[in-house]
Image (cartoon, rainbow, N blue to C red; front, top):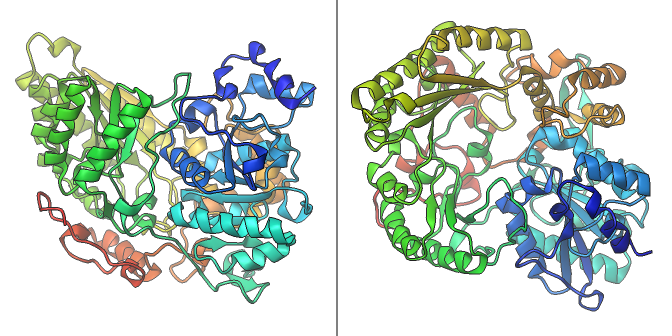
Length: 621
């Protein structure tokens, strides 16, 4: 019986069969006659999560647009499906053709979140592919990876054959061309990887051997292949208007996390928040022209049938022509009875006119991110908003009739004291008071402010990459401290993130190659879907760390020395280590750095590409 038929027999026995069916609107099918290279795009989480990720749509489109290249999707199967697959001996399969994963030429994983690492191990095992790269034969797929977590690549270095760093549109094409040449000319894996070194943005872990000092810290890398670069420089797409984009995105048959059309407005961020990895590794800012955004929006809506469209970026309201663009888009959306969603609105660039435009279609709750409870701590983290920004924005939205406001904060930040936690509670009290004074009399009883708190996790390639994370005990204390303060505030609810997952994330986010054994051991003990509360078992992770000799404090709760070699320094993200050190010192002094749209702050990205400087309201050129 064919694999496709065997899979078909399982679909009536699982909760979400549409996750495995394929055939979605705008999906691609290619015949063996027109296929030279089989790419498997692997998302290490459930279908409904992966199908909400714009990167999947872009990669799927870029690869399938190449002659002779067939990209198919693979997702982590749900628990019920995995049990049946293992019982029936069915390997991990693609959504498009239900082709066995082991038959792909290359399996490429996107690394968006550290707590998906055990899912990668699990998917390889389900595929029948050896987990360790050193144990794979010439007949096994080559394993690739990309995404934000690739900028700290070492925890998975013994698993991944090569990483792709930075923007993938051009990089994927170049890698695919080399893979096709490998197949035509019969190169070995080693020969292919040696030639791959010539492509900018590619890191091949097996060509480097980490070196350690007696205290366990790293001292650098020893190159095992002379042709490998001393440092790997990320790839940058300079012109967004010439950048390929999927105008006929996949439309799932089942509900996903975000059921809407998405247009990428720009890449990068100029704010310089010192805790934010994306704001550093995605530099510089590159905007699409408003004419192209409007054209892409119309074509995407026409090809999908969605009733909502979202403009995506790290900070949407920082787009230099956001107000006229939104007004033009709303004209188009109203004509099609379509809503417009603007995530990532900032308190200091908040536009009442924009919100009035989009609220006519759908008025839901709003989320703002002060990040810290006091101006002193916001200065430390370089979050350039003031109390006046917060309260002015809240007053506007309350007067417009919004009754649900969410305030997002981070605790455990470097330099934080209990006074900063008091500040969070005070902001919540003031928001409730603003509603009492300015809110609609008929709606005051329905008003609610939600204080949502996440735990600070030090990330690679940020000014806080040297910082220690608070211990779980200290984070728990802060949670209960805030809970006691906020339970006295009427119309206020409190949400906070678990400390165990935050500690694990911190360990994996700044880890070195020695963590790979612990990740595999955790999977052997049953760990997977670690970002899901119902599947997370930290006791098993702690056993895995103990079994493999990993010291949790060494990775999570130890401040790094400023002269210490960091495991991710083999990657050049564009922002220099010297710049991040200067930002760290400015944080210690409570000094902010200006938004680099207002003038260059010498982060180092200009070594590779010129940075456009945009002013709010300026004409786009």
